[in-house]
Length: 339
Image (cartoon, rainbow, N blue to C red):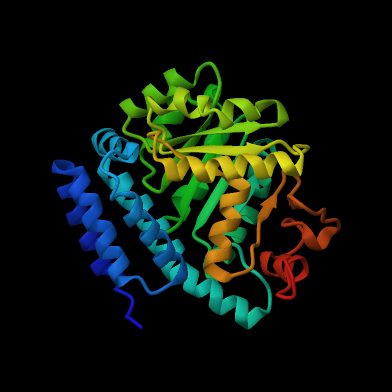
C-alpha cells in the first residue's frame, strides 16, 4: 500500500497545479487527477479519481467549461482552501479517522452533517454548535452543511472558528445583502448554496463579481420530475456556472420519485452535457458515506436539534444535540449492526 502524501506536500502540489490550470485548464486538471489517483490509497479517493479520470478523457465534456469559468471568476485562495479541506482533511485524512473511530466505538459515523440552524436562537445555542463541530472533527468529519433561514450570516462565526473544515451554507437569494457579502468574502473555507428562484441569476452574478464559490439548490416534489428528467433545470442554471446544482427532496416526496430523480442525477453527471455538477443531497451524501465506510449513515439535525432521518423517525432527548453529546447520539442511533 502506498504511503499517504504528507499534507504539506499535497498543499504544495495543489498550489502549483492551480497556477498551471490558469494557463491550460484542460491539461492542468487532467494532470492533477492523474497524480491524485497515483497516490490514492483509500476506497473513496480511488473511486472518485478513477471516475474523474475517465470522464475527463471526453474532450467535449461541459465540465471543462465549468473548470475554466471557476478558475477565471473564483478567488484562487478560496478554491485552494475549500478544496484542501474537502479533498484532504475530509475525504483522505478524515475518512481514515472515521473508519478508525467506527471500529473503536462500534457505531457508524457520517462524512458530513446537515444542520438546520435556528438563527433566532443562535446566540444561546452557539456553544452547542461549536461543541458539535469540535466533536465531529475529532471523529474525522470535516464537511458541514448548514441550512440557516432568515439570518444565515450568523453562522459565519462557526465557519471562521473551524478553518480546517469545509462549510456549505444553504440560503435564499434575499439573504445576499451587501453586509452578507462583506462578511462572506473573507471566508476561504465557505461555499454558498443559493436557492433557485426568480432572483437567482442576479445573485449569482453578484457572487461572481465578488469571486465567491457558489452553487444552487432546488427543492423538488413529484410535480417537479419533468423539469429535472428533461434536463430543463440544468439548462436554465448552467450559464451561471454554479459548481453544483443540488437537488433536495421535499419531506413528503414519495420514495419512488426520489429514486427516479437520483437515477437522473447520476446519468446527468455521466453525460457531462451541462456545465454544472448535478448532486442529489440524499442519494449522493449516502453514496460518499458508503464508499468511505461501507455503511450509509445520513445525519441531519432540525431546528430543534432533533435527529431527522430520511427513512426513519428519531424521538427522545438522546437524539437531540442540545441534550446529548454527538458521540452518544451516534451510538444510540447508528450502531454498527445497522444504520
